[in-house]
Length: 341
Image (tube, rainbow, N blue to C red; front, side):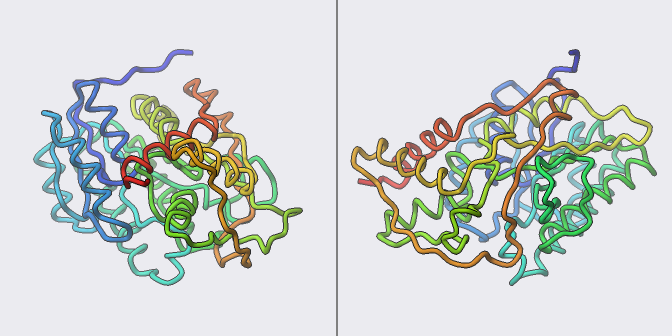
């Protein structure tokens, strides 16, 4: 299978650079000698100290330029593209979170719709080689057919967050059709790992445990219908993106969408047990979470399960990190970063 390798002579613009995936992708590109322009508005959706800690790791790289700004500022975005002339753009800036979108819809429209539109416009007027952008597994809504395939019908979203991500796919397709901008959308499935997002379940569970509080599990305690999630380790996501950014779509309308998931869904309760074991090993004593069971929250879906066949057929890549490996790395990082005794 032949595909292009990373070109270190190109300039890479990464939005959401202080975010979880943006940080790891930028670090990997910088380590290989690429020039990276990073944009982030450092919003306070979660602990900004974690965002600054990620940036602190990136700042020593000579070819890293950080710009604090918001992608919803069109004039700023046009100026950045004009000044730095990026060849590859990876849009990872977005307002994340399904539940948060129910209470705060405005920020999703501002960042995920207007911000993404500004990026498309900047790409249109500053001919880029490839725009890669984060979509989400949430576009599948409550689809019953599993595993989820890119060709599945995705017109019944169950959250505004999912609506914005599906909108991004439609907008990108239109710009690819009209202006021949090569674009690739990534439907990401429950990404986890060290330095991850504190609003994600595994991170919240860990924080709750060390605060002496019970964890909430939203399945009504119904183990016959346990929640399933396709947990995907961050290094696998980054490796998939790294391969895809150098291999833009060659179709007449140069737009494609790929699932990046583990293709191996885990019961939430098994994931929790694995996290307990990982934390036990990291701190040298047994960890058992105190659990309380609650009803499913609006916008949540019972299962996510990615088919990764298209990704494998196109670039020969499939995520491979087990939850045992991934959660152990997270647990060890958490204990060190938060100085847990």
